[in-house]
Image 1 (cartoon, rainbow, N blue to C red):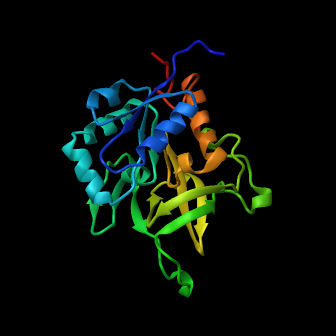
Image 2: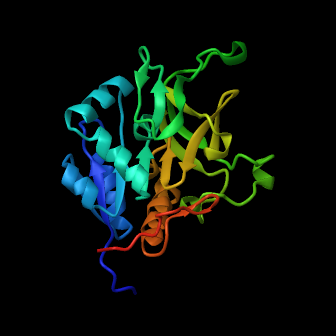
Length: 242
């Protein structure tokens, strides 16, 4: 067993997250997690997690009130691992169309749009709540799915079910940033993305059973080695625990 200290995780508290479930998942993976809204804690952490449930505009106002917008942008620019979950992933984008137009953190180029309620003439319940499959973008079918390009999904079966609660989804400008796709009726949407050291999941890994918890275990393991990108090592991505 490694003698390295447990990686320090800052779980950003801006009043709109499933915080304790995330903290428990981090602890189970051997990481030392703190729920915090302090800039100093975010800067000092080895990895930052931005969870979230709620409205995009309200979330951006809360982050601005806590003076965390520039800190999160600096974390991303510095190459520190930054993980967004559900609304947290959406906040990474340039803008959202939820209840008007709202500027996001602008860490990942793209927009956030609403799931259609009547795609191809079919009626679907929005929000999308429940278990849906995730798959690699290049998979032609579940039986032919290739290996994940995303290291945090290592040992997670392609086509496995994850737990979702959302009405909006991300449309990254760069299709190469998409690491998982999910279908809701005939609508196929980005359910996971990576842009360098920044990773986001629309689903809730901490509420997705053993496969979801595997993501946290993979995150912990990566902090003892390097933070790998889907296209190779990212500049500034080597993480050393304090």
